[in-house]
Length: 120
Image (cartoon, rainbow, N blue to C red; front, side):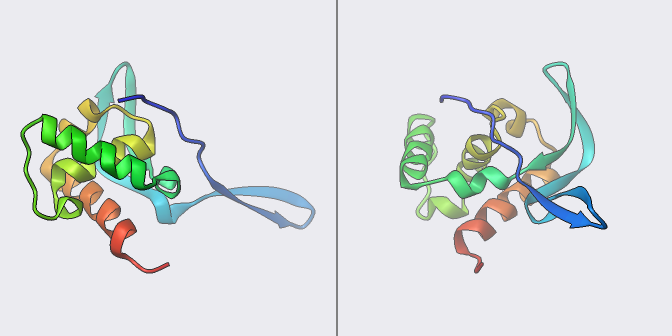
């Protein structure tokens, strides 16, 4: 899968003539612990890249799951599918997401699932 780094979306606010940059907390996930991965320590994930997901990304995730032997009636509710979409949205490799502890993996799944089914 072609990996890409997503641009972190931030809210810019002007207060008293000074520009203040506020991270988009709605799409940021604080992990329950810090993970060492490829020389970096990762303690939060920026999911603002979910806005760039399209049907082609979803088809690619389905193909990856099928090639791995994973079968799901409703793939959008499947953990493997959600981790593939998360990898695409964050620019981190799927290998990072496969090493998450269960609580963090479920948090990632919930963010992706909520993005698909939630209301804006």
